[in-house]
Length: 220
Image (cartoon, rainbow, N blue to C red; front, side):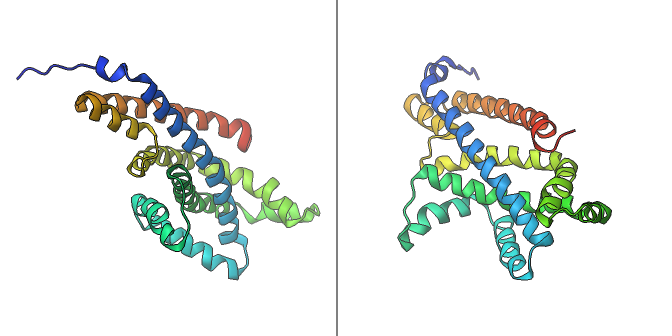
């Protein structure tokens, strides 16, 4: 059987691909920043917060970690309108990705916090630092350093999971591949190109975060 591949039919549609890459990168960047912040706050709540706060945060973490991402996305985009909350595909995608990363990063960061020796906290208190200063200056940096590889892997998973957002017409990379193959019927080539682009994005994101963490987040 002869296979006649025509990648030019896909690459000639580079504006669609470029727009898809831009949306994927944008969704991922916003989701990582907000999701990382949410993860730190929720990890603090679960590790050191008052008991009245631990239960709702724990319920949020368990609900997100034990349900499929696509169900979370559909609930936000298709379910919330029944409550009068209508969101654009892009906003719904960001919210779903933030909630997803926030839940997983909560447990990753909490593991780092729980592994911090109590002596470090006691040393901070003996220096008359406030609980907030002890957490952000003494406890959090080494905790993040300890779990950073796991957090980076989770960020890559969230970026790859953004492909699901094309199901609600968010114009990310998989949506662009769908549009292109529907126009010229070169399905095989379209998804090969999309696969290669996702691979390149994942490698770039992993390397960026691996280098950015030690330099800007917790220091060497």
